[in-house]
Length: 236
Ligand code: C5P
Image (tube, rainbow, N blue to C red; front, side):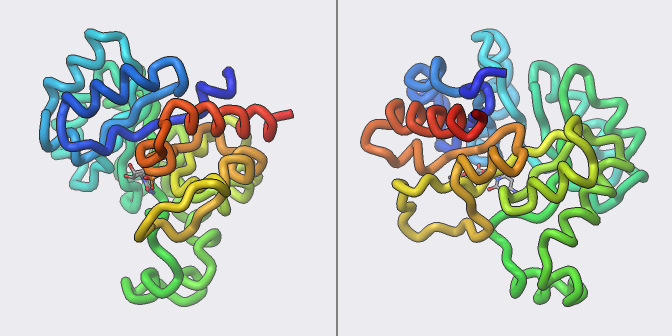
């Protein structure tokens, strides 16, 4: 993998026209584009077909969370062409058949704990203080559920990447959002368990997801290049 292949840019934009603008601008700068709920709700599966027809690799980040039968139906229909996809994995091995049936060339990642959540949020959800106060411990527990479910890896914060790699080995994929380069200030940022690109890569992240620091930069292409340079440096 080249350093740029490790950079994922989320197309968190309201429509296809905006998405196309960023795809054209960043196609040579990033490894994968990510389609999340905003764009999927606006443009639907037709947009995924457009990406596949345009030979644009993508990560389908719809974070499925439902009973296995429903997920089986949904995933089987939309995952063709995606390289990565996400599911919530609190059901552990009960999801195994669904995940295996849906792989179809796609690598499935389990969402561990969304990166905008901190210990207070986890306690408010009723998670035992032993885990709520130590998110890495909860991430490891959920990564185990992901492994039992047959996932190829997990999504977690850069602060948790090293622990996941140590526990589950180098082939278990780690994808880290909540990446904030030192030069990027995101107004009203909701992300909490943040790291820089270099910190996440040094901790073992296979991919980093960087949205607003690129999207809101005056020069998004240059911002992406700077992040790729930071990834390259961290890998040496
Ligand atoms: O703009 P920003 O760099 O915060 O983008 C983060 C992206 O990563 C968003 O598209 C968000 O949906 C996604 N994501 C996340 N936390 C997760 C999984 C995905 O922020 N645990």
